Length: 321
Image 1 (cartoon, rainbow, N blue to C red):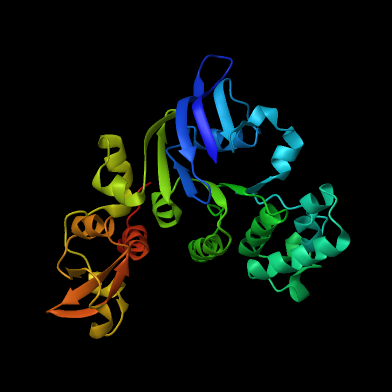
Image 2: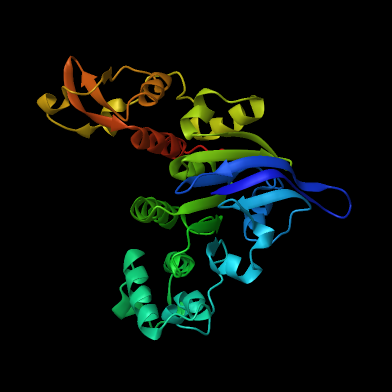
């Protein structure tokens, strides 16, 4: 879907913001860029819709070089959600969402139908909110409008640049949950930038860890936990998983309760299993029966374990930053 081939972005003083990046993002994938400040993650994101131009290499979308697309059509066909939200303050919520469909000359009927559909999709009652101005909404509600606006013209690709980082923790967690639910329903290709490893592990199908403009490692969350390529990745990931890698953890709490008889067809793992043992088995089986004292008590899947990894530092009051 999106491919970087030896992509670099070099400043005039010969410093590199991004240097020789090779990667491929699959259609329908939730792909996360993460790294310290100055690692090149936001630059990489912005090169996809040509907000920043690469100085070397090529980026392809659906097999075509992005420089071969008309720049405005490229941007209209890629949704974009910013940390700053950047809604037009003088426009109503309805008008903000309708911007790109109007530029693409949709009919008024099509636009009204799409606005209604999207507001319901992001959890904002159209009857209550469509005629309000952004200043009348909370930060979380404004960010929901930002997501709706990015989806308005039904683009295949959504770029999200630290969209939740300015929100309070409870609002942020709720929007993360809502975004995961939305992605399950609409299956867009989402490219997401964050500085928060908990958020990356919670949301990403795959995570790209960057440092000083270079890709250090790309992989699924469990791969980064189990097989970090170097000490930098190990330390970066450990902020979200500290103390749980080799220890027994509470499988019983994360299992979805089910009767013993309905679990007999599943491979089983005991409540005494370590995190690495569970991740290893989930690489082979989509779901596992959880067994306690010889009794099968429920099902566990990869998402439940990743949720545990994302939440566990928060529960202990620790931080990776």
